[in-house]
Length: 364
Figure 1: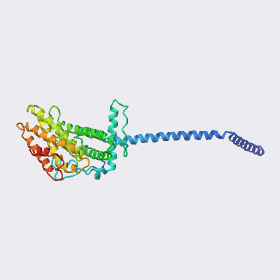
Figure 2 (figure 1 turned 90 degrees about the vertical axis):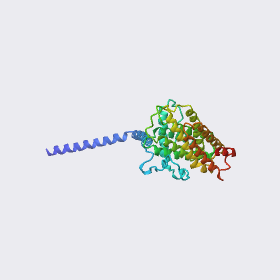
Figure 3 (figure 1 turned 180 degrees about the horizontal axis):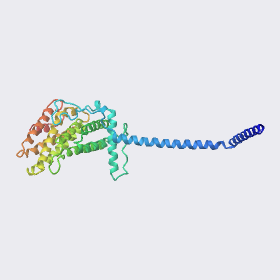
Figure 4 (figure 1 turned 30 degrees about the vertical axis):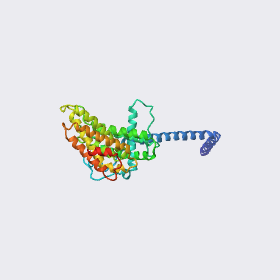
């Protein structure tokens, strides 16, 4: 019996050995290139999947940067001096200080805000074939940056009540001034730049005088008009903008004076026009007292434009004299403006900038 069991064990061992040998022979006979192809195929699929994940991650980061990145985070908050002296004369002559305070990080963040605004504008417009505006830290076309920033600032003036208005307006003003100086120093595309700045000035002045609704009810923020006035005043620190702003304001005063002359004082729109007139006269006084001396030292100071806006101020004063019976304060305020001009042009540094006839007109 024991011999029979021993024979069975030997047979089992022999069967296992034969099976192992047969399996080894079969594995050795398979094509070695097949397993290699399978490995390459899976590696290629893994690489494609990784590229898709990276692309989705880049799109997500771009969307987050544009929509959720606050312009002024807690680590880089805007100083509160921007709207200081709102509606008051500044006793100290000052420049803009843009170059010293303009931070590259804030610049990039502001450009992302502008880019996001432009992207939404393009999505909402029907002309989807427009060329995409590329904005970044080192763009090839700064003129497009200037134009987009101007549009951004003007659109921002629709939300003066917004808590972020001061920060955003400050950053836009700084960016526009720095970009404009860079473009003017290069001396290229001057006609296009002038068109952009003229559009900025015209739209801001119009906006300043249109913050009262057509039915005569006041804007929810009583300082809204003065905020726009202060914004123009700050932008006017650059002679290229300031001189054009003065010319635009004077021309608007002429138009408004004619409207007031033929308007019914009891008309619902009369108080709005009255308020607008005082705000514009005040803006002229602010800019003349703040910047005229500094403008005269700037390489962007235009003597031909100087004659134009000084002449316009004289014409505006004459137009307001016709309204003296209705409101003598108009003439008193304009006398103060022309007196300040005559005082500054009477100095040795500015005396030769305007014609003698124009200077004599300021004295009368």
